[in-house]
Amino acid sequence: MSNTISINKKNKIKILDQRQLPFKEKYIITDNYKVVIAAIKNLSVRGAPAIGVAGAFASFLALNELKDKQNFILEIRRRLKQIERSRPTAVNLSWAIKRFYYILSGQNKTLDYLKKKFLQEALTIEKEEKNVSNKISKFGKNLIKNNYKILTHCNTGTLATTGPGTAFGIISYANKIRKNIKLFATETRPLNQGSRLTIWEAEREGIDNYLITDSMAGYVMSNKKIDLIIVGADRIALNGDTANKIGTYQLAIMAKHHKIPFYIAAPISTFDKQSSSGMDIKIELRNPDEVKKINKIKVTNAKKVFNPAFDITPGKFITGIITEKGIITNPYKTKIKELLSV
Ligand code: MRU
Image 1 (cartoon, protein in one colour):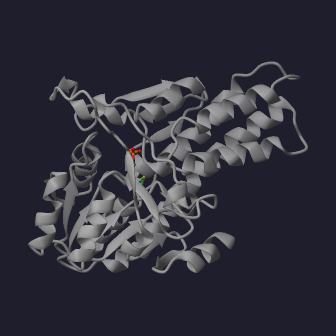
Image 2 (image 1 turned 120 degrees about the vertical axis):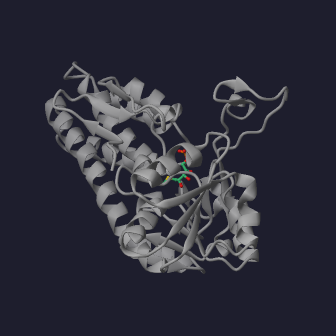
């Protein structure tokens, strides 16, 4: 497992810069919360659970640098809002930040006490995400049999979660105990999280892997090359509609057509009590240059570009959702309600 995000003894945050992978392993080391916000925005750190952990450490840094013991509450609240807004779709970020608002609403409002509490909370969130993705891996591995060919999209490994991963964690766990598993990873245009990150992680984990472009998925499915599809999630609504990396929706529809089980793997922190369906989920629109350029080189003279980072897969196309509390299947409404109320 790589060290996606950590904190050192001098209270500096160390973030593996995922923009430079797979060819360079460079770290961003900082005690400035604004640098962490920039790292979230520019995808140096990415993937819903990892964004939550980065947001938690940014919250600690934001408070830790404040000196005025009397007038800091308004300022830290303003900073938490800033962190929360750094990316809109992955709900794990606001889920993490809510925990810091909760600490601020407590009785003890002394700066020194709150600094300690913020650090503790950030470390707890990091630890929880690791444990949770371990549990997801263990539940999900039972879906995988010997000789399975599995397709995944985007990146859901340790880089996206800080633990073993969600969808990728399951595949990697199964690879250790099953025989002859093959992984088909989509390139995941425009930012190539599949070709740059998933393949890098698959190589490190010794998983037999094939890279395909996004447009090859239908052909690969129709040739009966795929037994199972597992992807992650950035936000799951109360009816099971799921926001995940752009391209997920079309994979789910093709999977239905070819009768291939299509699973989402995600922690409970990715479910959103405020979204009753996918219609309530805000989809992030990103810079057109991500589509116009490949490796900083312009490859088109297009003037207008539409670049949504995520799409919504309706719950009816999802065979099951693998969480740290077990696997739930369609129809989801009641099961998700039960899952979130425990
Ligand atoms: O834009 P990113 O790279 O942060 O998006 C991440 C994803 O959408 C992944 O597909 C993932 O499933 C969600 S995080 C495990």
